[in-house]
Length: 102
Image (cartoon, one colour):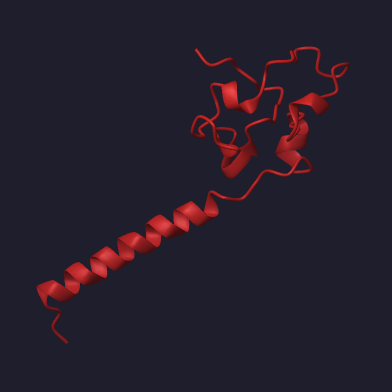
């Protein structure tokens, strides 16, 4: 069976769209506080619930949204994090790997 140039272009566009949508769907999973990596880093979806006795490094204005590792858009409720590949963290969250944005 011979494939025409038009068929090839249509199939290529469909394949690219499928890959793009698949990546977007996978990135929407939220990190659970019970996830082993999240628990090891002391991740909390709500920074106000951080155990200040256990994590003395925590200070009130710190949150994922103003962390250098946060990859979400400004003003979004959640976004990606370099530490949790393929998962999102809450913008109001916090973990012990917090690094202030420059």
